[in-house]
Length: 353
Image (cartoon, rainbow, N blue to C red; front, side, top):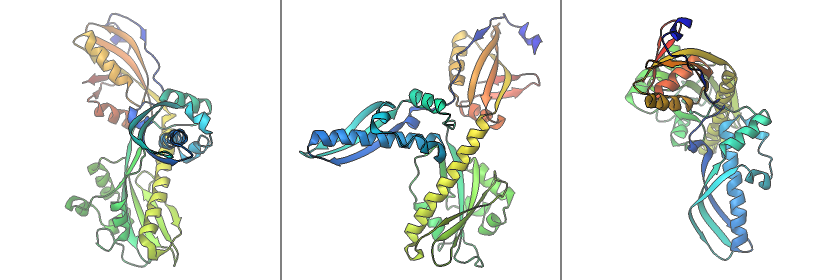
């Protein structure tokens, strides 16, 4: 790499360290509805604000860390949680003598929360969404023919009816369409047909694909066997007790528990991967300095980038070291999402916009 530096006017500029978590405001801002009754409207409003702060804080914390990490934060008092609240905006409100009702937008301070989590050594995920596709296979008894696209598959119907979770891990079932039905069926899913599952991931722009094989558990509840591409077909079983005669409630609870298991696995893998720091040497050609400043700011706001250090600049080119967390695939994907492309020249990469 040294020969590249002679092409430039040497100018060492050390840029600011980029924090562990970058996210847009939507990660830290939560819509909260409150409806509180107390001795008078003033007390009801005060109690509602404390409840809204707690709800927003808990929602953000559960997004950014695993259930184990969240448990270390969610025992705080109302007075402690107030310190993490950056802003509360009233979207709409109304009150009576003893009641306060409002739609609020509550923003948690990214800086304060991340500093506290770092101090307490609570790991956080990189705040970019992951997409997981679930293939909901169902059998009433283990010996039955498995169902997927059939109309009498209550497990798939429950997934289709489920409301989206407020999470950085976006979990969705396959859409009922000709393309999905051509790609996969129940038998292929249970046989772990890797090429079919990879095609599902590719066509749905998904980070992973889970098969959720649900079977009634005796006369009480349902048992779900989970395995995925990234788990290399390693199984995990989730048992959910309940009354099969109340199948809608039973499957709704099963979706909640399965989703929690998947979320925690994705977050734990993300945290483990983000402990790995890699770096590459990059060259970028610019027409004027303002173009480089604009590109520099865009790079600094990509979630996985930890540090950007300029090593040389001149003659319309800049050479810099790019340090990033996680795998090459993640940083490549993150760069492409911002309109960048990297070309490999062996000793260095050429960044194109």
